[in-house]
Image 1 (spheres, rainbow, N blue to C red):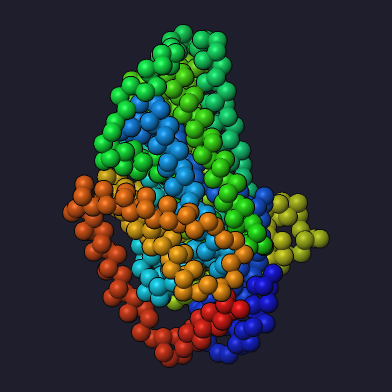
Image 2 (cartoon, rainbow, N blue to C red):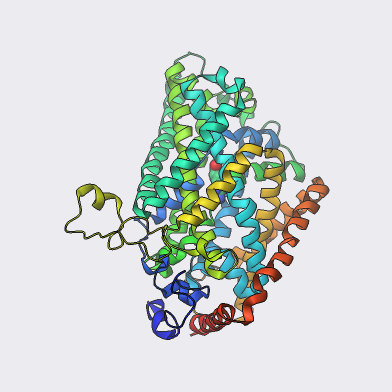
Length: 533
Ligand code: ARG
């Protein structure tokens, strides 16, 4: 591919003083080709890691717990299913747009790279600031706490769940430590654990669907009280709401379940063939997710009375109890816990790469952009495949051994996640997440259109239809505007937080014209030439 020639285009890389100890300094081309960088050791393809990464990250807690919010605000089952379709298509249009950007600029860091390229580096910095400090660890904390809740529920019972939120939080923290450790060991261990949990989720969602259909046809269920409500046509349409704010809230609730669609772009640099596999990964995984969410929702409607769905924030567990009794609720609780754990694992993998890219860029102290634990950029265990034990071969990445991962970056992410787990007030966190997250999605996708105008000749191995980013921008603008009116004060806080990144930007960037900074700028220019080739 064009990018294989990158190192040849950058004769400066790996020479010159100043970055022997910390690996490549900060320019993108060095990050892409430099010694001791993740992008140098590519492992991902569509089937190996890619697909399961996206599916595994997206399917977490949402589909098992948030249908109530969607239903209540949409008003009727048909409206709710429509909301699930709209939210899914929104995620999909966003992800397709990201596929175009990512295949044109296949580097680790995702929106950080695209925003810098399109609007200037300050934009990439502001995104990184929000994503590293709040968005990534905040969303991971939410998933972790839900993991804790369901684990406790499965093993200790529902009473313990109400008894102390601190038990949940302790389990959540243990989960964060475990996934971080797994992902520090090797990329293989990280991606293989994600794979395993993706299988679990698929069997779970397929199982729910099949169980729903069987119950609907036979009318049998463990407790003998499966809902027959769905047989009335009015069940599906009665109560549909017509107010746009209700729909906005419903869509927001659905969007949480689809969230994470942008994450594969953080690791674009580790795809062996990103130009081809990134778009394929995105389209395959999003179609699978949308389909499985719709089927699961239909199954809930077939089995459970509407009142039960709408009054529960653990709809999957209720489903399990209706179909298989206590065993069913235990199994489903365990499955939801596993699903969240897998999502947490995948998010650790991608967030680590985002922080790592920020370290390489010089946005964060350089050691966050370092591989492994040693100061020497590439920590290679004396590892030869031929002599290695079976176990080592199973867990170590070919050719580089153990700990060839952005360990410090993932630890920073884990530390922040734990802080949010401990202080976590989710009301604020979710608002922040929605508003700040979608602000950046909006500007990134808008940037796709800007870039098409500004740089029509940029090599774009994958081009989405121009309607795709336009639809995404319109819908996300609508959602954002509702949030601004509904919660003006919180929105103001979010804006203030984003802008607080500016002083930091000047502080981090002021050294740029001397020493390492100059090198960085040079690389940046080279990278521009390279991508424009
Ligand atoms: N969609 C996931 C869920 O349903 C949440 C993903 C959180 N986002 C993230 N970037 N980790 O739980």
